[in-house]
Length: 93
Image 1 (cartoon, rainbow, N blue to C red):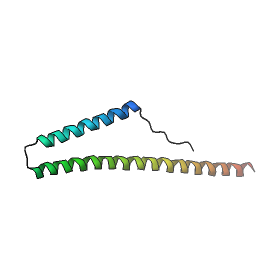
Image 2: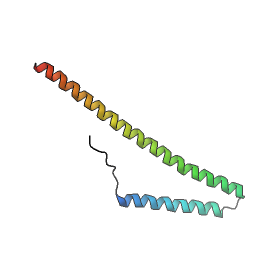
Image 3: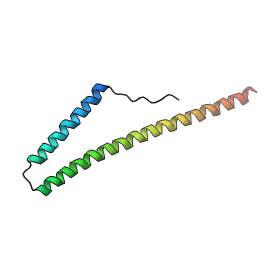
Image 4: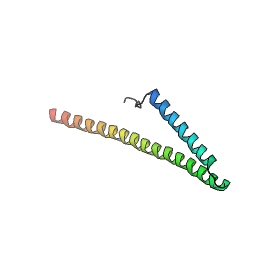
């Protein structure tokens, strides 16, 4: 079985990290400059952190399901090939 190699270049990875950093700085700056009470700023900051965490979690869940489905399909394909080989061998006898 060949190992799965993820697609994507280093340039793309650096671009996404950079975009995440810019977005985080912009969100922090927006919350910092917000004219609201400290508790309201804390609420928005916690909501932003939860949104980032939940986005990463759901992305991981989708990726894990995709990898699981890929492995399951490879196993099913191998079983089918073995079954066809056994039937073909019986027909030749």
